[in-house]
Image (cartoon, rainbow, N blue to C red; front, side, top):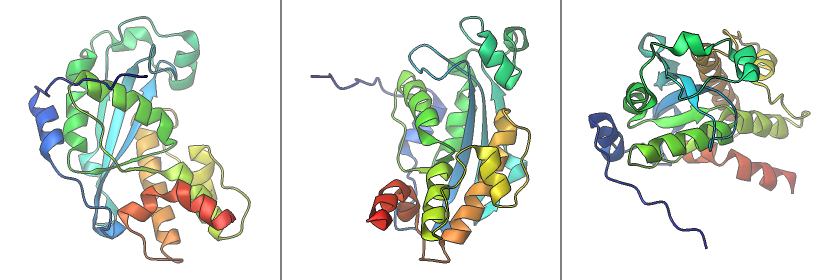
Length: 226
């Protein structure tokens, strides 16, 4: 039987703030909630071996992107970046030579996420890396997590349309939205934020949406397919 992960008490001010700040209840109407859209650039997709090398966070308040409060940061890796990783995001090992080490670099992101509902595109990626990163800081990643990929699939199902594109850029274009700099954490976070607002607005045409109902997009797929 797998042993539960034992966490030490959070020590940094940012970790303590995140741990004690409540997030909106699930029944909160989606437009009244506060969100943090996060995108990570990685050295690979295996959280056991790969690392976060850059991140961005974009807040959404009252149904609007607060671009002026967006956050972008770099993390110094513990090993050289693989060639395939560099080809995707264009960040080289030498570009990160002066970046702070991970435990220090991640603190502004923890602070930006405190008290906000997390929004990402393809949640398993960000979830797996953030869970591991936060555990190293002494606390757990909070639920709910809203996934724009799942929301896009739900909207297509409700409209009786073919499945929505899973790639972020294709999903944005299908919604007639601009695509910001691809494979750059801040560009992808801004695109994800705009996609989220568009999807939540379109979904509200069918039923009133709450934080909880948006978080349950995957379960709602199965309900509507029956």
